[in-house]
Amino acid sequence: MDGRMRAFRYSDLCGRKPIRSRLRENARQAVLFGLSLTRRMSTEREWVRFPYYHHVLDDERAGFEKQLRWMRRWGDFLSLDDALEALERPGGIGGCYFCVTFDDGFKNCATNAVPILADQQCPAAFFVPTDYVGCDLDEDWQVAQRFYGRTSGAYPLPLEFLSWGACRRMRDAGMTIGSHTCSHTRPADLDEHRLEAELRESKTRIERELGLECRYFACPWGRPGVDFGPGSLCRVVRRLGYRGTLTTARGPNYAGTDPYSIRRDHLVAGESIFPLRYFSAAA
Ligand SMILES: [Zn+2]
Image 1 (cartoon, rainbow, N blue to C red):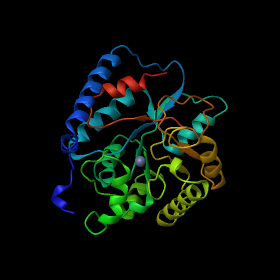
Image 2: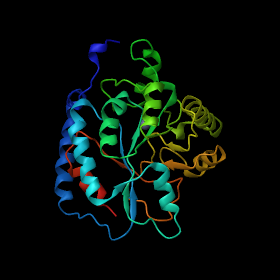
Image 3: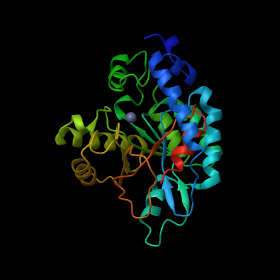
Image 4: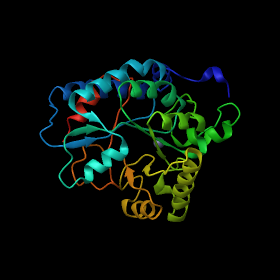
């Protein structure tokens, strides 16, 4: 594929989407702006919130930094290990916290997100589909196409993937690397045997490449009961020794939350602050 076609700007990515989807997105932004004015952040009850992103493209860096600064007004940042430990603490969480996460393993996580995260002292977690780590869009396009074929139009222009070397540098910067399966197949489309193979092989690969235990899994698509059967996934994940599963069900996590059913709020670094304000104020 032609390297010149790659998007590294959020505006390019949006511009490639069909007009109907852009209009829908503008309407959503307007609604979220209005709704965000009606909600107030509350820190009366202790919580851990898990914002999740896919990318910080070149023109999203300022927006991402602004969003992190806004979060910092309401709670400190925790690593994934510390966030799950806080949720299980018998005496309560001990405050309000954010644990920032990323899915899909794009190169811009290392080049754009990590420097900002390090500057803000925010130890984030990155979930990678291991088949695509180190996959070059020119030389391995047939492999990359399997990812882009499955993400049904979410990326109208392909983004470059992380390399294992970049993952090791992110680990050294205090970031967590977790599994997002091998192939990024929706777990509901796999039988239990295939699902177990995806979760075992991705865990083993990450551990071999990074020399650290891979403790966490973020489910592709991630809607409980739609993209995965909570019972069967939980069985497999526990059997393989994972310590937690992150979903895409929105909302805060309170003390005693099941570590295999962590809620997260999807955010886009290139959007305004209003979706963050709206979703972070939801009970
Ligand atoms: Zn994903």
